[in-house]
Amino acid sequence: MYKRGNPKDITEAYYIGLMSSVGYRKKEFEKPIIGVVNSWTDVNPGHKPLAQLALNVKEGIWAAGGTPAEFNVPAPCDGMAQGSGMHYVLPQRDLIAASIEAMVEAHGFDGLVFLCSCDKIVPGMLMAAAHLNLPSVFLTAGAMLPYNEEGRDFVTCDLKEAIGKYKNRDIDEATFDRWRNNICASGGTCSMYGTANTMGSFLEAVGVAPFGSSTMLFCEAAKVRQARDTGETAVKLVKEEKRFSYFLNDSSLANGIRYISATGGSTNAVLHTMALAHIMGSDLTLQKFDEIQASVPLIAKFKPSAGPNINDFHRAGGVPAVLSIIQEHLDTSTSLVTGGTMAEFLDTYKESINYEIIRPLSNPLNEAGCFSILSGNLAPEGAVVKKSGVDPKMYRHEGPAVVFDSEEEVRDYLINKKVVPGSVLVIRYEGPKGGPGMRELSIPAAMLVGMGLHTSVAMITDGRFSGATRGPCVGHISPEAWAGGPLALVKDGDIIEINLEEKKLELKVSPDELERRKSQIKKPQRDLKGMLASYRAGVSGAEKGAVWLYRDDL
Image 1 (cartoon, rainbow, N blue to C red):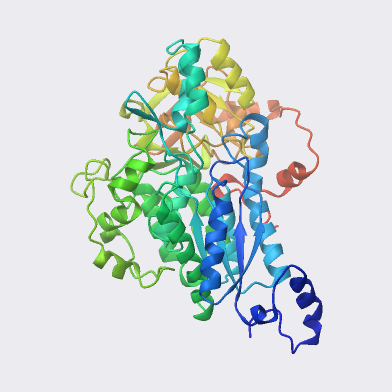
Image 2: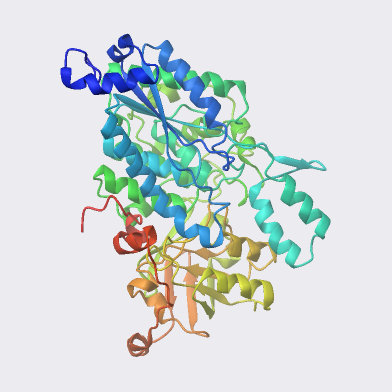
């Protein structure tokens, strides 16, 4: 007998009565009850397809002799939550995890299917799955259709960069309006290698989602079949008593990090894998993350860092192709929820690979991964940049600081002022506590590109950037300015050195002068109430994954 609904246990009468009231029959309590954790919403394109997919998953659960029970969790869209809304996005990662934990522990499900797609939902559900450690399997909605105009494909990041192009009058109002209305061409995850697709394909790489699930188009018939298979898999895992930790462990986590690095993934993945490692009880540090990611060559780049989009990636071979190419760098003894080990899967992998999109090991884009984890007197506990998205001429940059105390200030500057080539735009008080919520400065970063400034101007922050960001954008500076980090001491005109090859972020000001400035620090006035006040009080630094509700060091 499984956890709940045993008719021989008289204390279960209330549970049986209430489940019966919504249509469940006595015989269904004798089967594994599979919680279908859905994140469907009408207002997020990445999650809108999940309403139908949930029905297909439940068909698979019924067919395998299980009993499905669906419930929902929040699903914020980072793209929609720009500006002030972004304060609430990263906190929802931990909120999603906690809401799942609360629901599952209250209702006593035997196994779980997680339906997710976008930036904070995938990691939030991963955190919940790791904490609950029940038999679990993941499925994403699939990718958005690219928008095609005159033979050229456009995806979401092109719309962000169009803001800068329109500001520069490189495109006219009619073009801007047409792109604004059409570039997001359908439901599904944005067809670029942002955080959503980085984390979605990470699920495949660590073995907790079916191969091809993150990169295929949301509307493919194969997705329906895949959803039914996923439901059947969940029941099978319960009957075999294979908990989530059987699949997600230190070895598979390291495989996932290597996969992300080999494909030029989102800097947000650093934040999320650190948080996940914390819940797993892993001893992963930012320095260890850097060592792992640098151990594998970069063999692919996608929009916005290169021309191919996610649909192109899928047709080129997708995640399995990448894993096949880099397998000598992986621990292939790891187990897959779909059955067998990574080694067994790769031994039978015979699909053709487009080596123009996914390069062989003999011809990598870079020998040592896609990130640079920086340190120095401006980032004593680390900072993160996606090196693969930076023009090589900006690998080393030294220039005068232009300081802003919020995202709004830098947006206004970019729209209304003349940006001086060579400068370093410093945006502080946007970290986990300072923002609060560690806002994503994706629009200012995209504006730099759209204005043609990404080869002469750098941007650094204790906030974060989108997976769609390219250019010399350094984020996650720790400790953050609000917590007394050195970023609070920077003044206009100070010379800042960024060196991606030597992994340095240095403020060229004497220690004595910096010590003198400490008495002059004045935080911006940001009074809080409600959820954000609680978040500021409890969230850890970015170097530890900005963990809030799952901290164990308070």
